[in-house]
Image 1 (cartoon, helix red, strand yellow):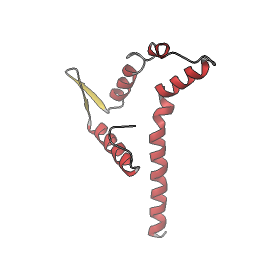
Image 2 (cartoon, helix red, strand yellow; image 1 turned 135 degrees about the horizontal axis):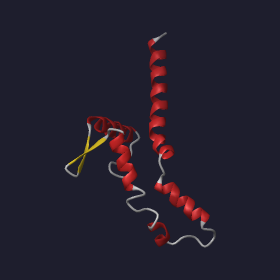
Image 3 (cartoon, one colour; image 1 turned 120 degrees about the vertical axis):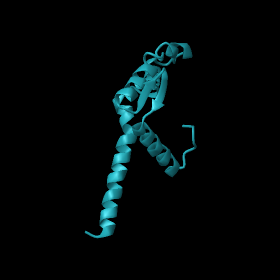
Image 4 (cartoon, helix red, strand yellow; image 1 turned 120 degrees about the horizontal axis):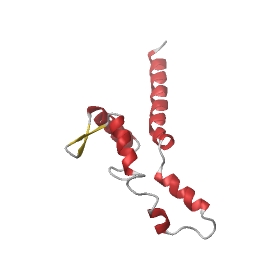
Length: 110
């Protein structure tokens, strides 16, 4: 197998892996954006008031389960009431920063 074939196979594998990693959270956990769209879509022609959405997204629904997932996954630890990244979490963050850089996305937004 030529080195270019090996490189192409590696690049394809990396691309599929990156696509899977980037899309997995949307499938694994409830996405607040998708829940909002579904609620607005189910509200009918009259639409939905902002206040009707607020009660759905409290800390117990959105923040709590996500933090639990991060701790269970070994990405974050809790020390003295503070959340800290583990080395595994740092690697993941650096990967996403690199992907965003390669996609020319702005830092800290969207």
